[in-house]
Length: 326
Ligand code: XMP
Image (cartoon, helix red, strand yellow):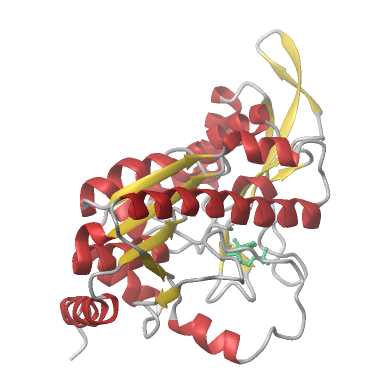
């Protein structure tokens, strides 16, 4: 019988069997899959597991804290945090091309993860232990997909932050290999992970880096984070967040338009809301959100985010538009 409780029990036993008394390392991305996989391994082998979180500074408001504080509180996992925000900002300086951004973020992520990994390996060695296993949050659909090759068109290079170097010296632990996304969420809830992690909607590996159209800077990240937090808060408050597949919020950082606020002229940036409904992200339609909700989001963003003086709605389906703007 399929219950989340049974899956947990089964996987915990399987992980113990596979890992024995070796050490295990697991990268956390802030997403559901890596968090649930890590929580399962933690339950199975406790402190033999070290989780690694590379903070690339491209997550949304509160997400780094969800990993560093809430995940740790819920699981008791050992966590190594690598604050790499500077590294990513430096590498992205002056870059505007979407594919170039994706490549840089993917490459720097691997470098940053390898550096963190080295530190964890050294720590283990100092205790006379050896890290032999790496946890991956691979799901059943990923298994099927990679068996079927790359697909007809690789339209954008996709990076799953957490996706790892090819010359790997580890054996893989993949406790989610038989599960679909909704099952992973159920297992995560069973393990006591917070709803903010378990119910998180899809979010691209390159993060806000591909939602700032133009160069990525610290200031632009701050602006987008603020606008995005407001949009998400209102979507959640409306109760419609479960019907919307995801709602990217995009900053048109190189565009400015004239506005008026109080007695003054403004010259600010537009924000684009991109709420979509979808089954699997391969195709999507724009979500018909209630006008009142759109009005609230628009009013709040233009009032609370000084640099933004216009909120626009993307009414393009996929195809021809993709879900993300880059
Ligand atoms: P697009 O923009 O291609 O997005 O319609 C389809 C889905 O994939 C997500 N996305 C990514 N996910 N790494 C990821 O893990 C990536 O590089 C990436 N790019 C896009 C996007 O948010 C949507 O859910």
